[in-house]
Image (cartoon, rainbow over all chains, first blue to last red; front, side):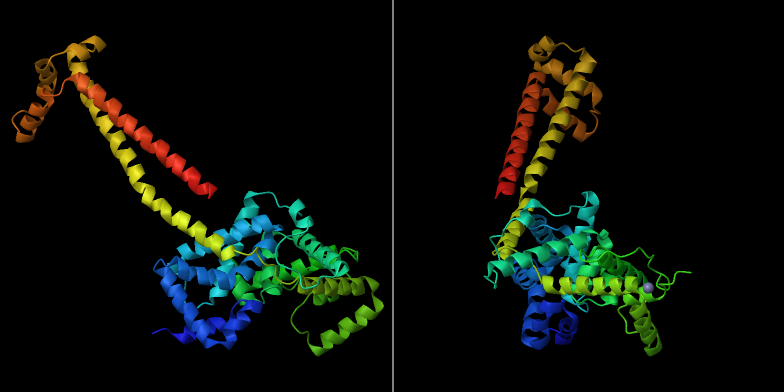
Length: 220
Length: 179
Ligand SMILES: [Zn+2]
């Protein structure tokens, strides 16, 4: 019989905003564990349901890491494939969402290591045909577009691992411990690097220009 | 000593500061425009991260993943093509070696290879193999019945099959990628 508590625990800390659904509904959680078990036996359709449930956080992480929708699509697809292939290594005590994001983050970090970091792609500056916007007002859309660009530019100022940490922390509400485990670094390293990353983000924030003050001390 | 420290660090601290540190930071921010700007910049940057929301993939993401998975799962079924290629290559190699033995013991000439009669062909292998063992005797009988010209045809035929398999494999892989 499915151990609800194993995934119930996962539900508690499942990927931030989307994880909420799993917190409230133990049935969904139980079904999800069955999907994973079936997928581990090679059932692609079962894993397809997992992909469906986690596509948004995984795509978002890839998009924030890589800066354009094409690379993000590629990376997200590949991350799900790697997760599917590596399901036998998945520890059911661990929230599936954080495990999945960890695979995606590693994949994106490797990809950025192989390629020179990109800033903003042409595609990301052009209007997109996907995801209908809830705000039809063109002024609002322009404003949102500018804000998105500013965010991607901010993120591009960070190193690969720091970018992953910021995305995990501020988009996916992951704890320091979860980030540390996902990126295979110490909790202390996560704290100090997030601290440095926040400093960099503030420094690069377009509205302000700060006098340089060396950050750090007490966190390393 | 930097007059902005430790306040500049505290600005970027996520954990709640002790009351006395918080009080000291508040006082410093009131008197230091640089640190105030830093605090405001971080607040604004953080707000922009919060406003950015989660980016969604194009519709049909799961269907595309399933297609990718189906394609990649299909790949192992092509392994027999590689196995066939390996077998045919190994077969060609064995036959080439057998031919080399024959020709090296009798002196190689292309014309000779084609015109040599059955008994001459078998003679070379007969010397080479131990005829006292039953396997050796069997192989001697087999080799006696195959003229060198047949070896050449067999090498050519098996290599051709190998190349055809390789071409088919490359083509089907390329088609798979296009899908
Ligand atoms: Zn100051």
